[in-house]
Length: 127
Image 1 (cartoon, rainbow, N blue to C red):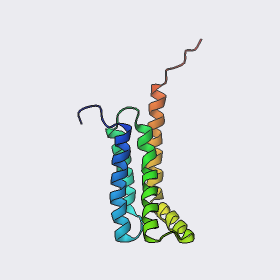
Image 2: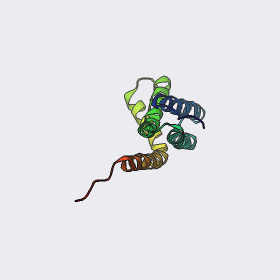
Image 3: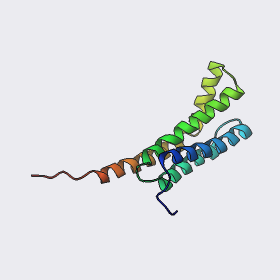
């Protein structure tokens, strides 16, 4: 990719778009989240880190879980309605179904982010 890469806004928009598209299709077809949503969450995290400018790593790490949660809650409100017990149960079940993917991508993303911060920090002089 030529050029400096995506800004923070671009990373958020693209990650949210791809998660909403693929997770929405999976929710419509299977009536629940699964492996496709999990893999998409991992892929958009890697893509956000790879194609974002320097300084966008934090946004690339934080956006996928939030975008997935927003997609699921929107889908559930449209299909189930405002029924608190059913809505809460289905929401937790959707998050639990892709929990291993969320955990793996979060661990990798936070490792990359904290590693960048540690490298950017100047070493302390010892006297």
